[in-house]
Length: 142
Ligand code: FES
Image (cartoon, rainbow, N blue to C red):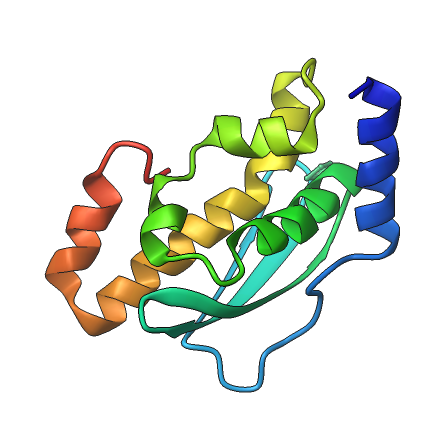
C-alpha cells in the first residue's frame, strides 16, 4: 500500500477511533503518557479465559498516537494474552504502515503498545507477582 493510503487509514482511526471509551468493570486499567509531549493513553481491559475479551482506550494527543491505540485495540481484541505478550514494536509499525518515522514519531506510534504491555504486567502482578516479573523480563515484553 502507498504511504497515502496508510495516512488515510491513520486519519480515519484518529477521527473515528475504534474501541474508545471506558469499560464498566475492567480487570486492569493503566494510564501512561509520552513525557516529551504529554500525550496520554489509558487502556481498560477485561480478560476471560486468558483472552482479551474487551478492550477500550481513552486518550488525547497526536494523530499517530491515537490512531495507533485505536488500531492496536482492534489487533488484540479476542486474542490470547500470549499473543499480546509476543507483540513487538515492528508489529505496530508495520500495522501503521509508515516506514520512515523519526524517533519522536516512533514514540508516538508505540505509546499504546507500551500501555498495553504495562497493563499485562499489572494484570499478572495483581494475580501472581512471580509470573509478572517473569513476564516483564522476557524479551519483547517492552
Ligand atoms: Fe505526543 Fe505524538 S506528539 S505522542
